[in-house]
Image (cartoon, rainbow, N blue to C red):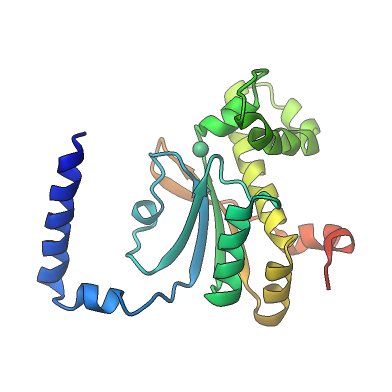
Length: 208
Ligand code: CO
């Protein structure tokens, strides 16, 4: 892709938006009030807004390799705290995707340099669910399941934070675990039973 093309695309997009609503950008510049925080993978095929069919201003977005909610990653923790405490968002979505290169890399015995500590978070997910995963003989099915379990564990990581625990108690913020299936284009709700998971672990992670 030619970089100049992007600026042409931008001009076209501006004209299209203004043709529908001449005050579009004027209104957009007044501020944001999104109800959703989306945490997804940086993969170029999983463009958050496009797969959800949402417009600018509707979703606060954070993306990183393999959609990790790492408790010592200042970037995701800043996004989370700002979204929950300042923007008062109502829903948090962790969206993984099948064919995730980050998850695939974490299933291999390979030194990937600076990516090692990042991907180790996924190896930890594997360790937590080793019994279930090792019982799946088909490698592709095991890979898909690890993608799902990774989403589940990142949802659990959200609940470990004070911001989410507080919002959960005060205004019933909801956490959703989804997977985007690149092969079909479908968004799949994993229907993670968070209250059940929470009941098991809150004695350890409760901050209040
Ligand atoms: Co990915």
